[in-house]
Length: 581
Image 1 (cartoon, one colour):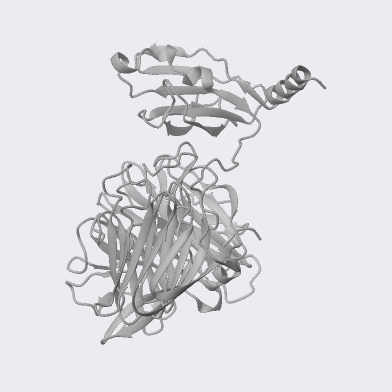
Image 2: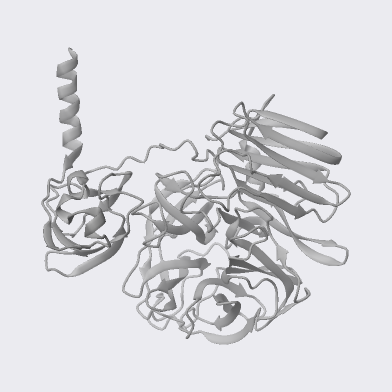
């Protein structure tokens, strides 16, 4: 077959899968246009995105001119950076309002988005990013931030997350969904919960419940009592509680009868309201002693506790935090962890982190189902991770073996929208098992890499690779330097006298996208470190004290992988990571 005939056949195949929209917009003003869809039976309209542009506000109308969806997309004006899929469904007409200035962007009719829109039955999610991690969870495309609604059921770990399906910067918050059988390899699932007229779907949590009891049969809508499963019950359901973020922030619930794959929103939403601009991120848990569901909510710079028998009617119990911990930013994404007699309140804050931007603090104390009493000094701030890129950390509900397994968002709000990727933005940090340790009469949270990560460890190699685990046995103070042939390096130091560990990424590679990115982070070690476990994955370094006393999570963007390691004061063993099952 000659080349010309081959190219003609290829063009025919491509035309069958994707066609240009070839639509002339109905221009209604300098900033307003409509576009009628002519999808020719295709599933998607591929929208061209140009990240430097402002969001265009799109109202999606059906055949009766009723609005079925709203979305904000940075539609391309003169250059398409990438494409995002809009599933057409019942959509017939797009009513689009731009934020452009005609004097600098030109006339709407000349915008390149009209020529670049494509109809397609498929959307290519094959990786196009050299900084996409090999063994950390990432969305297939688009923006991701806080982990949401995590739970374990029937051998499957469920991870929901704040997601923008229409661009790789924060917007259009929905719950994305991924599942895993081993806490390491993740499978993308369809969108779980999308926005409605109460607002966008902000962060929240999910719980596994027993089949609900009600006078008229098993139903969330009319259930008078809802309790956790007692073990092996058929019909166990999942309830998600989340923030509806519209003109106000209120709390809503949705229920799933298929194990968390699809959700139905409760007809009586919202279930909790409050007169405060920042009122969000509900974390629901069962309190065994009082036989009640408890939700802890972030409210400005405090948390509030509410109790309920049926997850629909809530009673205010108490507040905590006005005089405790760090108050340099808004409190977000709380979580309550029970370690027998002691409880830990996780509390994420932005800004206010130890090295700028966002971070996770925590408080140790007692909780009786009504009030949290902190044992820490009010002026003390305990940080869960001393890296720059550890935020929105929450735990899985119903984790097996009584474990408390946490998962962070691996970025920082100072530069999360600007990191040098486009197909996707942001990953989750590695899963970590949490515990408690007493040092000098004080109780601290410990974080160790979850045991499932051992399955990633491959053969021992001489030098680091783009995805590897490095185990460093140290004797006294130590200096560990990762570097490449471009002169880029990350230097880590353990000071056995001062009991500190530091990581310097000022020369780590691309640091140009934000003045806040190049930095050195320093952590107390709360005792002697004998072994470090370093997890390297294309754009990140996570350093764990093997006993869990210290953890540090930092992003890096080297122009080529670090392939050299030097250790002074210790011995390193480098292991390949098996990223595939």
